[in-house]
Image 1 (tube, one colour):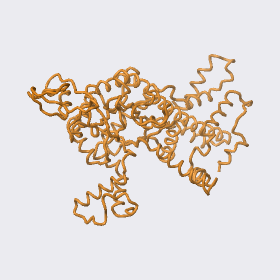
Image 2 (cartoon, helix red, strand yellow):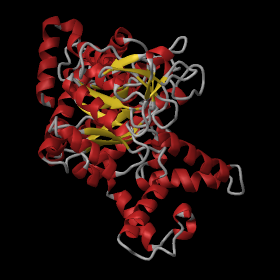
Image 3 (cartoon, helix red, strand yellow):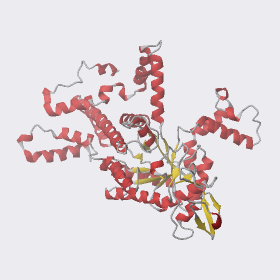
Length: 531
């Protein structure tokens, strides 16, 4: 609906109430409605699900149309990210938000910093989803408010061309609201607990929920040791629980990302139930590390399974966990992915130990033999040493080509001594094109970095502390922060405006007219940043 149409709708709503409502201005109502387009989290989830589905279809047609996101641990961080994207690229298309369970645990728990083991309050995740969208909606209100002010100034100046241009910008306004991929970990309990929490996610605005196949009460970060997976049927029940949550709330096209940690998980807590040879439970158990035993030589308390007429004893650890055979990780990942897609998941996430396109693509090709349009969400993780990994990949490739590598020590390629070498430059180029190449060669639809803003916050704070508390003093802030903000056009240099001061002034004028006591007058120090 255009700005003019919204004004007309507001005028129709006001008209029946006559003189008592004379102080209600239809144009002001229209502006408030446009500034608050999304009334609920469900409005957001329905809107963004359609965006994500369209993007998935576009990727299927052309792998160059992959999507991206950065993990954000606070609403302000997510807001500034989307404002920057609009400023630099003119559109938010193909750019999402990622909500990392790791960052919620480390930064948002009432217990204080926690490891990524699902010990944080489960409600803190939907609370962050709601917070992120609150800040993005405020970014819309702020930017539209600035356009309305420009429109008023153009009208006052009799600038018909300017009025036409601004009305077009308002009517074609692109919202900061984008899809969010939200991490539900392993569901924080059984399938019923997963369903209840998924509803909270969706009601807060999430159109996409990522769930992993680890045991909920043994959950570990994907890049740590000691991971324990569940039999497929347990995981599939949770996928169905999430789908039911989407369906119940009327977000039929909500997206489910099924994550497998099997590549790095060598343990299971359960032996799967088997109905008949070759079924899913039997396939899961086939990966167990077992030894054949004689019925006459059983130990007290031994747990046994039978297969092909043989009696087998799965190797059980003192922790009461069972271990898989070494070297079965990729096979288990492929089976996990195929079964997830066959049972309601839309996208896959394979947690790997390194960013290697050949490894990822090899598994995806096997999956696509069964599910031709299988595609991934991939973690471009800060847990990878990207510099070392890619320098070693180049080293290995060049060695295989028969090149003389005597100038390089593979174990020490992270050293600054190699910066600027041909090998380092080639590695950096491969890092630069990793997302594009992996989208084309390894089926990666969505690239994300889970924890980037955790690291950028630490880095920028360290730099400021070093300068401000050192010899630079106030210049450490002015030169490296404020002056840079001004010259790079960072919106929050006018922090009062970013926090909603101008929106509040507009509302005061709507409510009180000429009697409004506004903050944005001539003596507001933010006017110093107008130049």
